Amino acid sequence: MRKVVKLDEKAVVRQIRDYMEYRGWRYFRTGVVAGPGYSIGEPGCADSQFIYYDTDKTERATCLLIWCEFKSPDDKRKCNCAIGKICKVCRQRQWQERERQRGAVVIQTDSFVEFATWYERHYGYLHSGYVARGQLDLLTGVR
Image: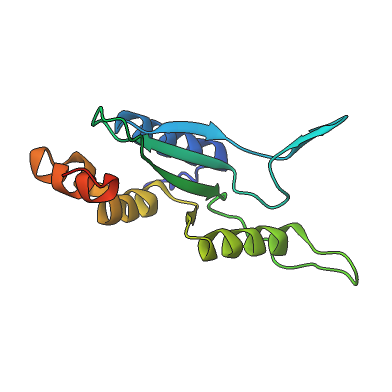
């Protein structure tokens, strides 16, 4: 009988990060950081973002951006809001929904296979050679 190995969140992040960097995406770890007179990030924001720069060297710079919230495969956290205090689970859910309403791509995943399947369905054209160039031109407005 084979033993099933459960990956932790860190291992899932590493797999997906390697996968995306191999395909030309830049990885950025995000989070809320605050100090005297400054803050970076927003409460509930996704763990990471991936940015893909268009390789066409025109004056118009364009990029694609994917927000990615990673979860452990065995994450079972649920809402535990208290009166007057929103929990982390709900704060993340609200942030993701606001970003989607603004037009952002936000994915929450706990599995490399799930992420790779989603990615190939939505962004596989980026790696299809010359045929995909037409798709990128549509995004950038190049004719």
